[in-house]
Image (cartoon, rainbow, N blue to C red):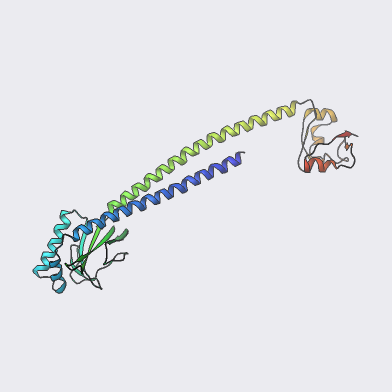
Length: 288
């Protein structure tokens, strides 16, 4: 009984842990998806605020010192400041290979090849990447196509956001789940120990009552193992056989050569050892 209860308790704790891991994964995945959605909406909003005429002029010249390039660069810096973006804004060429037309990223220059994160840049719709590590911080990027008045793709807006604070939030969320799981396991452990102790006390009481009945019984009782070897003898049996306990312990009860009293079945066609040890059936016998 106790063993079954222990198995049940361990299975229940394992089930709670599996459910907790699944819920944690589901919630973290939902938070990342929400963050990507927010980033994509921000990229779309910014793409609507950049004049396409400035982009057209910047894309046809390779010189980065023109007034048009400066105007486009200033526009990106102003948008980044106004929208409080903790990252960078970059305008990429609409055709492959993706090169930089203008950027607020430190060290980025016009006509540099864009180092794309682990995400596919779509020219048809807004897209985003998952979390990735760059420059000793965690980042997430969103891409929005910039179109001219005819709907043709002029360039791609890349919004790269520093998500270190978001990662800390995810870690805090995971820590919250971990502490909750540890709390539940601790409570479950105390409940398990309490019930286990109660079960152990009940078993001890039953065992004590059994041995009291065994010891105080007026009938002779012998306890045998599966081979028929005597394991325990009560006082009534010792009085009946007129022997000491050491003289009976360890002897084969069904071996007439070892026992002072041999049981003979009234129905001699029945095997006493087989009936008592294998099938557990009752039989009638007489002492000889």
